[in-house]
Amino acid sequence: MLQAEFDQFALEYQQQHVASIRLSGETPDFFAQYKIDDVAARLARSGVKPRRILDFGAGVGNSLGPMRAAFPDSEITLLDPSSQSLDIARKRFPGQADFRHFDGETIPYDDASFDLAFAACVFHH
Image (cartoon, rainbow, N blue to C red; front, side, top):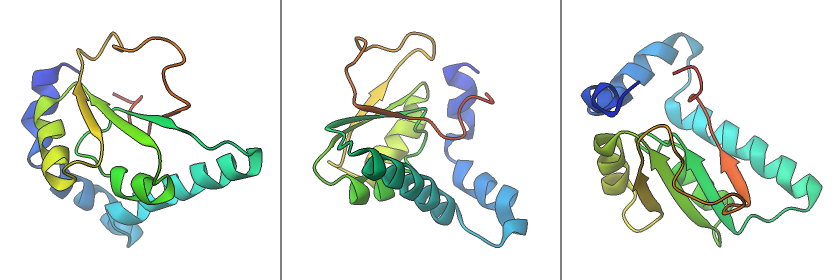
C-alpha cells in the first residue's frame, strides 16, 4: 500500500481498529500490551536487553506506550510509510521515540542498526 493509501486512513484508524476487534471484548491497548509483554518475556528468558528498538510499520504508535514501559532505557524508532500516522503517534507520545517516515520499500538503516525489530499487524498489507 502506498503512503497516500495509509494516510487516508490515519485519522480514522483507531475507530476502525476498535470496531474490528469489538467481538473480542478487548481494546487495542490490551492487544498492544499483550504483544509487548510476550516480546519482553522472550527477551528476558534469553538475557537480551535491547538498546535500540525498531517498531517497523508503527502506524499511529499503539505499541509505543507498552514498549516504552517494558524497555525504559532503550532508544525506540517508529518507522512507517504514512506521515500522517506518524504525526498522530508523535502527538500521542511527544519525545518518547524517534518518528521516521520511509518510502515503504527501502528501510533507511544499515543492517544491525537495531537490537530488536518489532512488527505487528504489518505484513498482511
